[in-house]
Image (cartoon, rainbow, N blue to C red; front, top):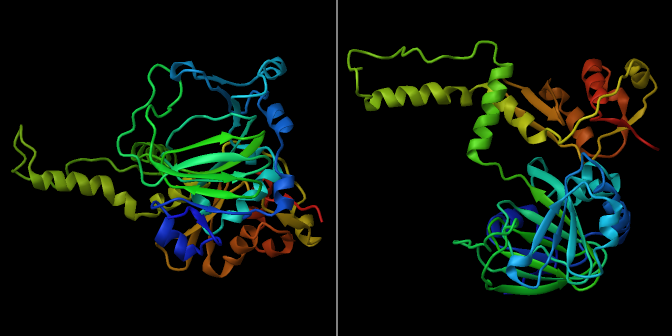
Length: 377
């Protein structure tokens, strides 16, 4: 069965046929004007020289043991010595640093935007590759300039065997799958654990729109930190339901059930709901500005916009008609009748600040944390 689809699947088709099930390719899914506005290789190299930016260089060796991976920031002299084949530069969170690249996120609204992580951009000349590998998360691979040849597994890999004694997770053995060559604007969807390998046929840019794939331990740890910071009266286990059956050296099934209830009751409270929205929208980095003229901004109906790189999420609370909203690292509550504010921000197009007339403090917070910006119109 061919990987290539005639058209982008609908949201229903995507979740029913492809999500976690099988990969696909859509030709020319991203318009040329969007591709043209994405970060190019020169600016990408410049980003990789910045201290706060996560970047790495992968070089393919002649033998399996010759693969190397070095981490930035890089010096300009490094690029002068790389040569014209068999290396790749990868930069994480590029959507946080380049507005044109962040616009790419809008094309994936058929998937849960709140679960998207970042856009990693890679540049490689002819022969450049990071080897055959799997990812523990979903990813869309958008082809920019150039051409890349991909091999993509037809089923998830069950037993992953990696090359030993190198700093990369590259599969030791070949895998069965389909092959496809992609050009500018083409998009590949790859579910978790599906092996894949891309090799540049000519100098190429690939924009990897990756999803979050948090482990249970990571989420429980973060939720614990949130409880510690935000819960006014943190529950403590005091054996409230113990009886004479609680003998010195035996924990009975009913005691275990009691402890389970103690540990899980909080998942039915608003603390958990509020943490979820905060967890899935918190940005990699934040910048704060001072705004002392918010009322003037509202009075003048100044046009505002939410950048695509900052996520927004809302979910109902236990109280009827009450919702928790998180945008970036800002969280607040709204009544159902005011959810239009969320809808306006989520459009990621300019809108009037006048809609915040009854919510000046919220707007102040959103502006100060750069969740909303004054639009260029």
